[in-house]
Image (cartoon, rainbow, N blue to C red; front, side):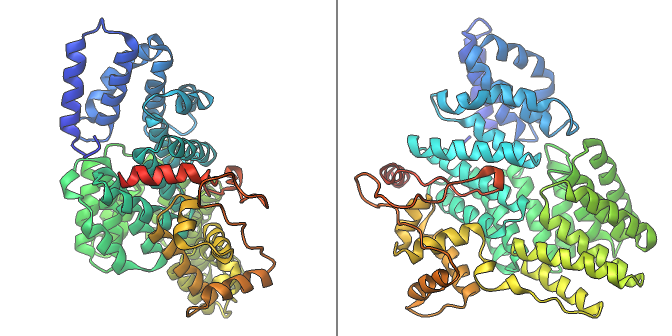
Length: 515
């Protein structure tokens, strides 16, 4: 499983279960059946076995007692991607997570808690996902688990991406990719490459996004869920490059090999419709309509909003305006800030063409504010240009300066201003030195700092804006020094910063990774 050889992993698990037989202890069978179900769920060649076996798995989950928690989590995750959003899958998932007991008591580490994070993020259950990320990150430090560390960073990157926190998504994905390559973990290399490429694409680094995906072993795991998402990312990158035929091929492949056809997870039809719109508008409208029909059945606001936007752009005219207004209403009820910004841009442009300049400016100003908050510079530029067409030019006050720093960048800036080295900052935040360098590059660009005195200038600039430098965490053995506490993660407020761990635990994890 670690190496992405899912067919072989599945065969070993089936052989073990057959050898043990139905009279084996339920807790042992539950552990093996959980692994078997997870393996089958992420490979299109195996996924068809799950539905017929679900009644057996549900009975075993009850008979196995605490060891059956993983099967309950699997059941909830499976249903989350395949049932309407308002169904009772959350109850099964919460029963398996058991108020944190799954993470605390599972001897081999919180494997199914990490599986749950992915499902929760794709279901836009932000609060639940953040709680699990915080729990898994804390458990990662205590156990020194590379697999758990990778999962926390990888799914943290996905959550940040879907929330529109592009700098955070890029930093987490880079860190996960670095560890994935160091330890040759195929699944992490593919997932992290997909998330990093999408973050880079939104930030305007299209060439770098292409390079990241070119190095990912996508074809080696082409039947896996990870490869499906990487193909989706590659299709979007190729669309941005104007390589329409290549993009269409990738997006058609997504539709052929995906394991869960849920528009809230993968809006492949609407993306393909955009690619086909010039050459085959009838097929494009058909695909967009099919996605909207499926999205309405799932009833997830992001999925419905994205599908409505595609239908609206293809329809045009007053029908298009009506659908864009409806799309905005749905997206406001989701955490999809980037999708909302894109839809408001299309709505503002349509309103301007209809002669409603005042309404257009209102839509476009909101879109610009969202794009700037996300750090989506190319999108912000397009919105600014559209605002210019209405007769006004927006003042983009937050594109530069301290107000442009994301929460993650601000935390790194505070630690750098306090005098910590890049390595010390990395240990404090449990990320790589390379990731800290990436953050500092963005910080210096936004604050227009150059040269060897950049850190000193950074401290002065933050102090001048009423931001105190963070109290540096100790980097050697011994008790923490006295002074102000480091900012802690606040999941309810959307803050994904990891809680600053005991530096001795961080050193232990660092040693485990090097090993």
